Length: 205
Ligand code: GLN
Image (cartoon, rainbow, N blue to C red):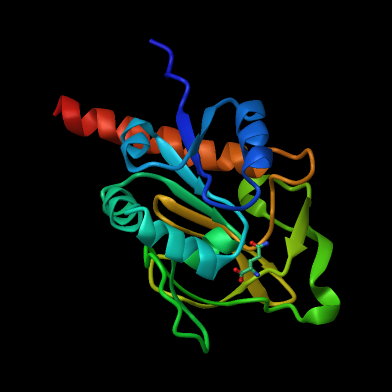
């Protein structure tokens, strides 16, 4: 039987939700905006988009979404954080006592590329998605300062990590939903399909 079309939720408390929904559909998924806890059970993967990390973390706690997301991600639900989403997923934030979900063993630095570089489009080498460089849009982006064991560094800009993966958790400092290239959305869907296959195997065993 053909694999089913994965259902991906985009956290819609704040930030650039619509662009991710469009890109995920173009990459071959069903995609829905997610605001409520009960919607989490219908998902094969979750995206936390760009926005403002302190605001979104407060909203996640206020709406009772933080713990259910952490539980599901620790149990294997694929998660992809872009920009603010990378910050929210991280273990901690350099020089700030900012709460995070702590599902990705990295330390990030917020707004790390400096004022003159606040927004930039950079041709990034991302071997995991092929040889052609990816035109990556950075907007007041974080970088990765520390990676824990088991975290793969998938791309760097100016010597700083900007795309990492730890098993079912993917994070990018930049915004792959802006611009027409859906290769990173397709890469995330490959993680989701892998998780679905593993899930099927364990329920069949
Ligand atoms: N600067 C934002 C933060 O630190 C992230 C920016 C973004 O998501 N585009 O939360």
